[in-house]
Amino acid sequence: MFIAATTKRYRAVKEVGKIKMSVGVIAYYQLVQVCQAEYFRQLLKPVT
Image (tube, rainbow, N blue to C red; front, side, top):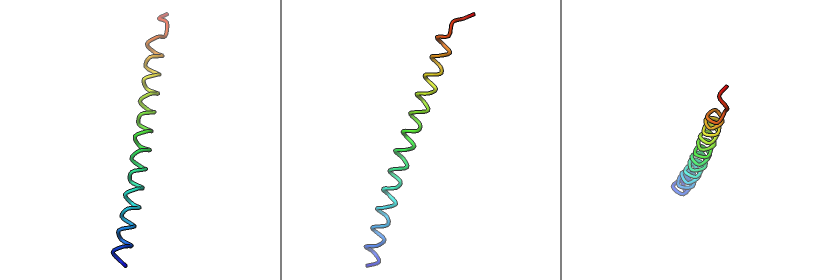
């Protein structure tokens, strides 16, 4: 019984880890996209 409970808990922790990883990856890519957009905006700004 104890081993089954431990296994379940481990699986749950593993799932939460996966979710956190994917959220982290999504946040990172969004940040990169924002930076790229800002970079190109600066690049395309008319020189005065």
